[in-house]
Amino acid sequence: MKLELFKLNLLENNIFQLIEKYISENQFMTPPIIYLEGGHYDPRYEISDFSLNSLTHVLNISNNLIVKHKGDIKIVIGILVDNLGLSCNENTCEITNHSETIKNNDTLPEEIEKILNKYLIVKREKIIISNEKNCKNKTISFLKKSIKLNHDSITIEDKNGVLSILYHAQDNQFIQLAEIKNDVIWIAKCPSIMAQHYSNITDKILKRFNDASDITIIDFSESEDMNKVTRGVEVAVNVYIPTVINTERVNIHNVFMTDYGDNQYTIANTFSKLHPLNV
Image 1 (cartoon, rainbow, N blue to C red):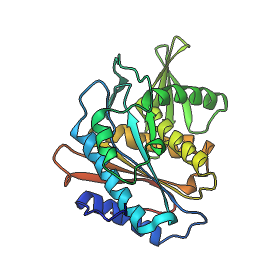
Image 2 (image 1 turned 30 degrees about the vertical axis):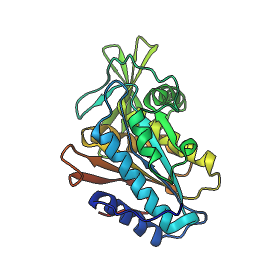
Image 3 (image 1 turned 180 degrees about the vertical axis):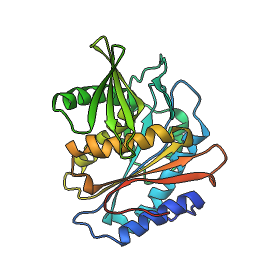
């Protein structure tokens, strides 16, 4: 069956046009990789409207990019599972008690599978399904190595016997990446978990396309997660991703959606060294 262009809503069209502008204004050694992530969900709860809507946006945009550019670009679709219960704002960052476990990373809720099944472009085995528990474990290992290597932007602060692992941010603030209690108990914080997520995605894309010369990540999140996500991106591109690839070849842009419908959203040019996407 032949693929056809979908009619995009305002949010989808804005992102589609941003990607189009980016592609038209730059030259690439190999087909650029466009990674779009939506459908973020917490298995403790019913699937939210955000999860279903963001995944639909990702698939509609991806469909039209494929129809227009065919093999001249590579589209990768991803879904992130919140199996930790991350809670992060300007003042606090914690992982809530979470009894759910993900027995099979490839198992998705029925509601999400139904949406995926509606789209001809979807190759189920090609979707990158990530989960935050895996990111938490990996980021702790990464930070332990970074401390041993004395990374320039990472410092350790002792407060009443609890060690804080801090990243010196571009705004001159300090982002807490982890705590160490009793010298042995490591507690990862939201920004480092999100940083690890973006690093993992970059690594997985490079393993799938080992000649990739340009990667753009478009990630849909809820507006209440803006702090942990934007902080995580900054840490990712300055500390984590450089261990995987030259960050001048990676662009990350975040779409923050509200509960007030598709017309209420923010597209954050969170990171782009070479190719800013201007709204």
